[in-house]
Length: 338
Image 1: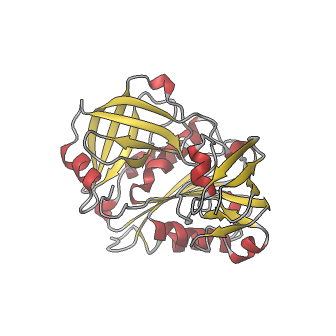
Image 2 (image 1 turned 45 degrees about the vertical axis):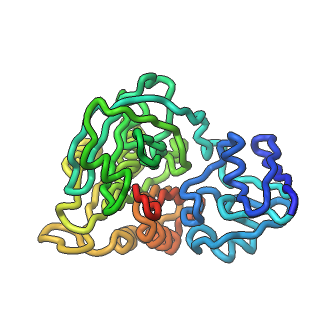
């Protein structure tokens, strides 16, 4: 097979994609800010319309791309391997692009705090904070000396001086375990970003649903805090799912936000061992029980892949358009978990 030429009219660019390569991977390599999230066919952030040509689609979940959407000519750029020259366009409007360039900047840990028994709050001071701009909900690639790079979402607002990250200690994880147990103020770190497309759409005036599982609370925190501080006055429903009570964190912070903003509702949900006064069950079931009609809403969903997929299916069943679901599935890399 020879290289295939792929036209991306939204940016007026043509890229060459080799055998076995995906359109998204080559677009990002070429410096194109193509909307994306998980890069593995699970979130749907890179959903695109194939205008001309043919592609082979690698395995993906029905939530990310349903059979009916595929029949309508939609594809996932992260799973699309061109078989011919092609023309492709991502879905969405102008606010679907994050617009800020990806930069690689030096910094140091400024503070380390404990969120739960297995999640640490890491705050990083960049040598040139003004050079790093991002939209709430995006993530960055952190590289510590002698450790594999890992992706973590910013929990801080774009205007905050320090970048905040929530690092969960994954059993056997090369990077997360080192950060969790040994990170200290002053430790050097390289930050590369911003990355990801599951960010706050500030032009949206309808209701907002924010759903977090575990350390997926990090991007949800950035989205919700930014929405309320920038006077987005629509209803905002925040659901935070965890296993047990000891896995919850920042509940006091969100209760304070809820008290200060009448349009904000915060609902923690425990999947096991829910004491009296706590919501129990799966977070997707809780959302489905509370909200029957989600037409016109936007959702931001972050956390473990199974939770993201179950929640996405529940939202679609309640009338939300797939284009209004912005998902960030938190993956654990094989062998060297983050």
